[in-house]
Image 1 (tube, rainbow, N blue to C red):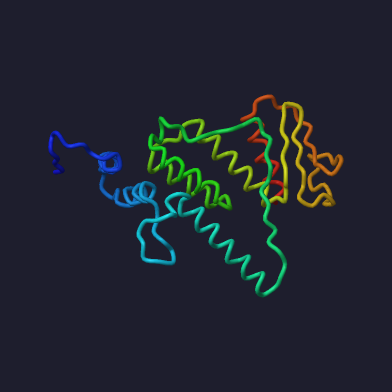
Image 2 (cartoon, rainbow, N blue to C red):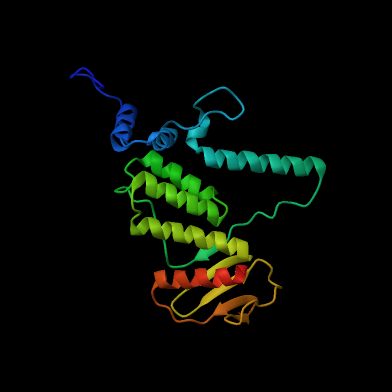
Length: 220
């Protein structure tokens, strides 16, 4: 039992921790509680003894990503070798999403999750992230599903070598990272260095599903 003076003011951080204990009261909820605590207080220093520090400001996933990338760049600079081919597909899908406040009330937790999502690099990691969201917060609302779908399309585009996707009611256009690459699918028409699927799909969600199908075929 947790008790406090009736006149005492409870700090906001303490209230968040108490709400976490209240929300995760089932048997075996220890991992979910520790994950929420990590979101609230931030991670420790990877190269020191501090258990909480400046990584809280950007999140452990972003910190590890930047730290690892800096190490790779330093190693290449010292040892020589090919530069890192670091690019992110640009998407114009008429589709967006979010992690709604009604689903995840704590702003710090939402910001941490956005940061983690931005650092994911492949679909298998995204699947694990989505399963974690379902386990911690319950069934994902439509806005969250759309956010994850856009992330999935971006990852698939990177794997398929597609630098940009422009999608509208009249057509879907893929711009390959290698503009000299030959058209890989019969469903696409090559025009001005882009691969065009002239398919009239008015609904952005249905269109996004079709984009996933085409990217899956491009990946092979």
